[in-house]
Length: 148
Ligand code: ZN
Picture 1: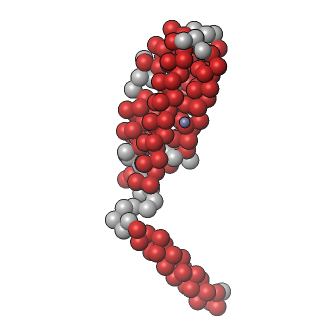
Picture 2: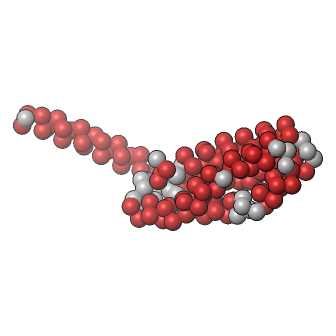
Picture 3: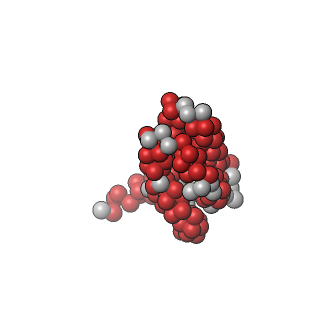
């Protein structure tokens, strides 16, 4: 056993050097999610996860061409979505926060287009924007550490 120790020491030193050199760009920012940061993420993550769970309701209205309920759903249950996503994004590490805020904006823009297309009864565009919104929402959720 003892003769492996020096090798392990060299490997650990190499890893430490690698970590230090990677961290050079932003020395004061934490590079990984600490328990304190994860705790803050967990304050806002459940509400955003709940919003994601409600998207199938919107899909039902779209399939039924129920444009009035599509519009009320976007402005009602999903009305605070961008605010809630941005609030959650702000708790992330800087490298993830910027991307998350961009995705929150994307989701919002897709839903605005969806709403516009619904008011014109254009089911094809509505369906496309629904999928685009969902893709961006799922990309956003993938950035949330507590969601794995
Ligand atoms: Zn998009």
